[in-house]
Length: 379
Image (cartoon, rainbow, N blue to C red; front, top):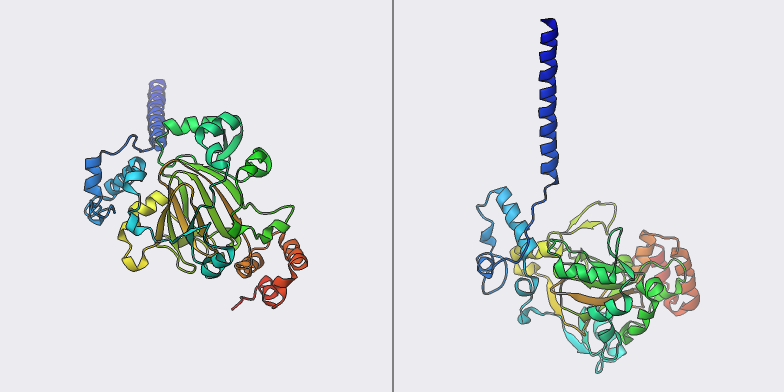
């Protein structure tokens, strides 16, 4: 009888172990499941979520919904949203001034925009670029099909496979080709396909021959990709030349942290957390009062946007976009760059300071730059 009891106990233990293992397996399987949507949201459903007149999300849409349903509804919206039709910007909300590169001289640009740190859109500065016809999807695949470029953290893909992926993907966060080694190592001949615009040819960082931080990128992105709100590194300024597609930009001036952006660690001024562009535009933007609304524009193909140092900016690709972008330091932002290099020193910082003094002694004549390199703010 004792043996029978022990056998029964063993069988019970085995059954309980099996049940526990089944429960564990079910839990593991449940954790692996990822909730998402595929396809495109019907227009009638969009009209219930969006205001027909303004195109903004209806704030009342989320009121009264249970927390889980609210979260899934927002995920559903982000995964199925049609960026071109639902997140485009009406013409009357394009705030940035456009200037013609053929009519505005270098001196006028410095006086009216760069020295005042005002962003703008520039037209007729790319008309003779070979990139306009050599950087289309078909030509890129034809000429550089097997070249591997970065499409995510630790992930590379050939150009041919990436454009094949774009034809079939329905992801909430599609892969974004953002490569800084294209022009120096991977496809050096692409450097001949564009010219640095006349307004941005002064670049003090060019004196750093070895170990220069990344400063120019070749970028390809489908709808829903882009960059969350950030200030460019080292407080440099930037220009972005759009070869194909349309980009929606949202900007806030220096010192005005965008709504929804929060500081991660008080010890680092530039360490912030910002939601992805689609999430920000669908869950934060609709509730922003007019006095806190961003400066906005939609960049068209063939246009260059100028983003001065210190400006917060977010960009959303409304369709398939291809662009080249560069950061630079010049006479207009060197005080901020010097302060930032003091606060966040790198191996190249002493070399940069000493060689800048040798090559451009005029920059140091008033003594202010020397103070900025020492961490004393210029007034």
